[in-house]
Length: 338
Length: 296
Image (cartoon, rainbow over all chains, first blue to last red; front, top):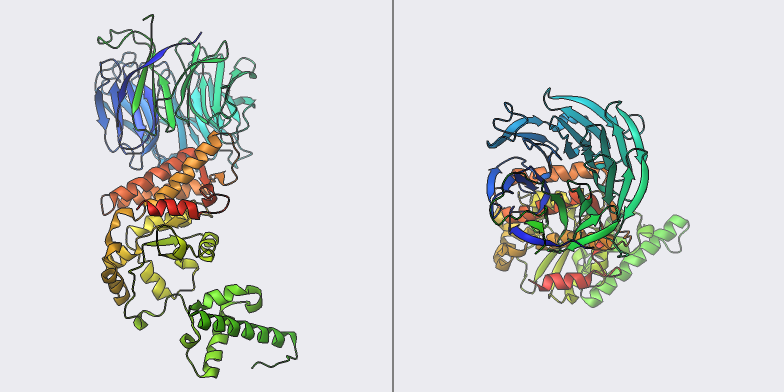
């Protein structure tokens, strides 16, 4: 059975240059592009209005912005092409950390490029409780920071003794906080146990660069994808490669982005050919494909289900957003029984 | 001193070299074309061993014959500034600066400057590799601010440059600086050069083409030899160029630097670089160039 998704809204020219990364909170969506400003659009109000622009966030442009998967949405982190990480927080969130604050976003902390010992910072991920940040580097290292204490608490190396490893292009933290996964240029996927600080699994299956890794909400599965054009699904209890999701096309495009929906049933993927796909993981099939653009898609994300009343016209179906080279934010909504 | 027949291998070679030069000069005189010192050297690098050998030999040949080098139709690519009164650029429709020597040679050998569908043009290869005198090079590549990022970007994009061709506005730069008579004569004789609209679009198109091709080829699952992943050093270089562009922003050429900035960012995100071969057609780049040059 296929699923129906409709384009519900497009914010044209949301950025002056191509959008490299988007990341949602329960009520808004961060987007980052080659320009220096971050944009925050509301995802609960009709028309997805611009809520806040953080100007001069990253002078050389920004390639990653992340919020926590499953978090309340008070913290965000972004990485600039210069290698600096900026941690953003909502005003008032220090006082009521369990609740979604209402204030504007402001800079809370900056991690300078020099604080990561060599390799340039690339991908970032925030823990579900929004208190830890994992970042990868171009020499294959992974650093974990405690955002409250503002210190580095863990570093993983993927290369041989101190030599640095393959460029770590993607990272994710499991929602239970136990695991860190990274995807590498070499095609390797590593999973670390955060409690022991050791490598838990070294996963094979993707021979080409891995550009996206994502833990399922229940932390039982890990999805990884990249230049091989297929999505590999790994079991996290045994560290086994359990299945591949692949398009029928014999020449699949590079996959740049992956995201599980809240129930863990569906995976969203975005690719360089401009196609965004929804996959039924259990059945291993693609249930929806959209290609609004021919330009590359760099980032696709489900919007977290929102308990609060949405404005009229926003619908109740599950929503996702896709963004990339065409500089626009395209929002899709599941068509429900109409 | 040259003797025939030579008594040693050395002398025989010297004789052969001299004969080769005479033949080339003869050819040049008959055809009316100028042959450059460099070109002579490249005719038989093994024989001549070095450019200096060629230069000395030609000078002594000329003085033996009691004529100037120019009388043999042998010259250098750019004569001394003082000896030029003016240059007629009226038939010139475009100027192409090509960094990659192999590409330059291919285009030059196919007489692309005369056969291009876009009309007559000038091919210039990277002055760093040409036997131009320091002064001439400095003037040609007058380091105006707008030039520096491009130049670096071309030389720094990882050893073998990603973008080896640029339609460089050196004429415009010359005009900007207005330092020497040559530059002034260029800018006044060739006012069209001041139309800046197209100056770097070709390079952008190229990098873009490379990127797009890399994407479509790779995306299509075809292994393309002309792309490879960036090394750590590449990445650091790209970031430093990006930094340079962003620092210089807000000055002259925001639109141009914007484009470059975007391509560099894209390169970092994709983590691949490509050779110029990514846009050619089985080694023939003229079709691609015709298309791009004609557009303007």
